[in-house]
Image (cartoon, rainbow, N blue to C red; front, side, top):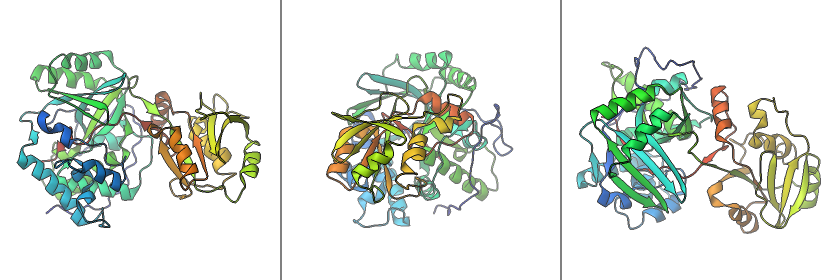
Length: 439
């Protein structure tokens, strides 16, 4: 029986100069090889699934229909239970553990016998990015060497921590970014010259994995990784925080804790900053705060130029927004852009929209708590925003220009936190393709 996960003190990483050492962990490698759990080539197409948090329960259930070993049964175990069952109850987490064990027993998931790195390539049309899957030390996250840019919600942290503990593995990789390093990237590219160990597509995106277990190559990659100045969490803040929770719980429960146990690490897949792709992360609101469309537009015109658009108004750059309301699109441009030397958080489009429109005109407060605003990833397209307003419950939609990777790094290096839902990375990693067991 898994130990009960406590609510440890909040983990708030802050950047440090270069140290990732703590008394509990010693000087752990920034990126370490591990004995991964992964699908056979024959079974991979029926196993891998999108990340647990990009689909609703109904969408996940539909995706898993007809897939006996679909990984949503591990990451979203409520889909195997009766409708209305508690997705955060003990039965759900037990079902997740049972599903993973069943895949191992059936031989569709195999465990590598020696520690390895995993070179992971994603191809979405013409977009290609190649990164490295490895075990990163929780201590590096806690000290801020692995840097974040978003706050997390304790309830979502706790959910993923229970899931990790129940399956005794980290099955949801954290998407990370590092500043491009030619020597590091050359080693990864060299590994892809061999035949891949797994090559599979899901929803039109191709995922290819090479297992790198040769001792010399492993040593070379480990040495090159040590030269990286930092890692940055791009997508997976709750998974990172959950890994820290599990590590704290297991450390406390283990009187013989040494610091080299598997639970002291967590699964990251890191890509060079010039390869990842960020899409827009748009906003939709349920009401106009009692205003008519005409009155609302008049008030918006106090802070923006408001120009009707013949079609979807996709922003062409920063400080420009698209607005869909009353059955038509408008292009909004700030009348008074922020100063070039203003704080980076002030210059963010998501901040400007909140500070100059959502708050003062629509009365929307903290977007983490205000239920009158919702968020739509750019992969859905601007047509989906129209649908939500014309056919759904929304009163207006706002299209934003994507946050740039360089801005994300600037925020994280400053130890600052972006507003929620500021970045949408696409394509997504696949769950189930590589897992990090904690035994």
